Image (cartoon, rainbow, N blue to C red; front, top):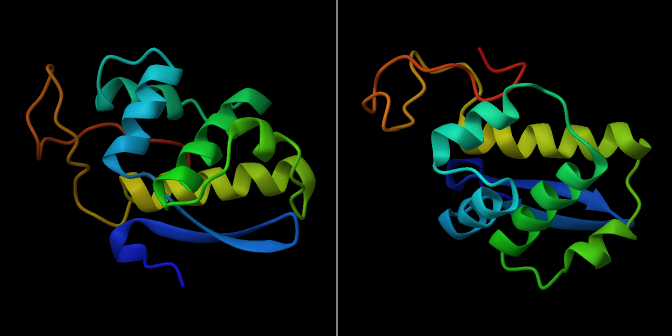
Length: 129
């Protein structure tokens, strides 16, 4: 069972329940995939709310591997999700929300070269204000 306090979510892909988590290793994988210099750049990248199919594959693949699943992006690309593309996007949004915050906190604490941890930062993606 997924533990939200550890940044985990559960998702159904290909009719199977999976646990996903964006660990530091998974976040580093995403920084590389999206050519982001740091976590703040990654947050800014996701804050647009616009995702391509490739983006969803990268985010969900990193989340699966971060939770210890041995699933390649190519394998993930062949999986189905209830709700189709909307289902994939909802899973990615949930994963990002549990990783970066859901807007319930007073501040988003993502350190960057432009600001110190604890300063108010922009929400990591739409729906997290």
